[in-house]
Length: 126
Image 1 (spheres, helix red, strand yellow):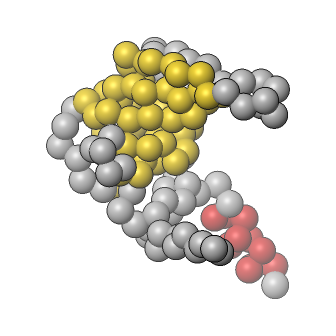
Image 2 (tube, helix red, strand yellow):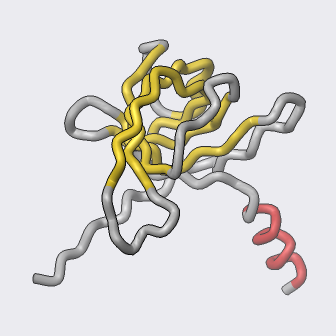
């Protein structure tokens, strides 16, 4: 029981990603914020379209050094900070941000899960 709990604790800090995802380290540049109106959104969110300058590909395949991506967020991100992004390819050739984590200078790189997970299937109840 204790060994099982310890093993689960060791996995808690791993970053999960779906098969077919792209996991990279890079920086956001040329950000364009578009407000997404929602009367229930107190803080305010918007879609940020940006260029992602890829420093390193950790999982997946991408040869371009700059890729188009988009995210939903409260505001712009600093362009002087490296992020670890989990990205999902979109039909229009861009990538959608699934998750992102700031990589502070001198901080150990987060651990990725050894294996990808199967993409969740979307079920519709019409």
